[in-house]
Length: 348
Ligand code: 13P
Image (cartoon, rainbow, N blue to C red; front, side, top):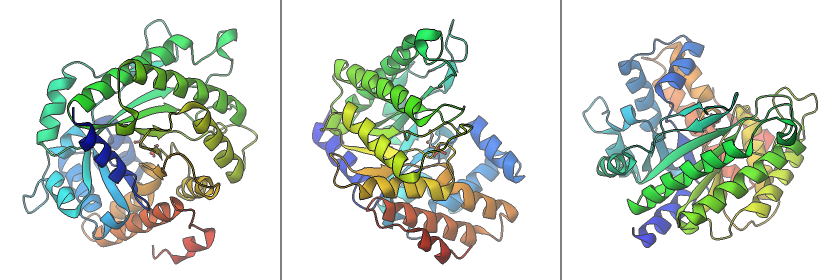
């Protein structure tokens, strides 16, 4: 492990005014996204779509890294250049999703544990040779209607199992000079209040960082991909943008080591504008111990995917314009410089 390499990569990933594009949808997720816009899910369509995203001119102004899926890191553009090489040439780090997905946790109805540790050391070595400089592993935590003490979820055992796997993944990454993105996602599904989300997120982050320390993972070489502290999608009472920003920052400060390289957020089903506004509001709260940036999947791709799907042959440039616009808005939000007014400037 070369800590200096890890630190320098991690620092560049969250450089001022830059964030990460999550384009690592698994086979099941990309099918869902393509079904949603009426595109047939086959390897060539996935390659064309990812090519559209990755070859967007000027993307490197706002995007420091792109997370790819196993199939994508092995694919090439029309001219035969591997996608990872296209990114490296632009100064964008190629990243790789390495978990094997969230599976039902035995004896814990409604809860998941992320798998993928088998042969991970060998896989990381290969991914590094294919150009990956960072990796991602996502754990999924569901908030149920009842608190854990009353038999509800998440249970302590679920949080612990996920944190343990996460820490072992992160240690293997650092051993291979690959920056681990650790992503314990607390889902927005359900009717829970923002207070309940705070309580669960606090517990989840505490447990994850305890395990990371126990497995000797260096915080200066970790990027946390966090979910925001926010009310459930079906909650009758939704918090304001300012409240989400305030509670999220409070939760992070209460739980994370100051040495952590940076934090990027997932969008988790928030609208593109809301995800941008929340990040902006957090960065308006003042200087934090870590850079707060983005690693959105849906919130960066929604508009681009929709436009591309309308006519995959003709709409490449238009889809790229949509991706570039949203990336720019999010980049401005990392500096607290985004306003609603800017939404009127979009050309799509
Ligand atoms: P969303 O921003 O669509 O939640 O995706 C981010 C991600 O990478 C989830 O693992």
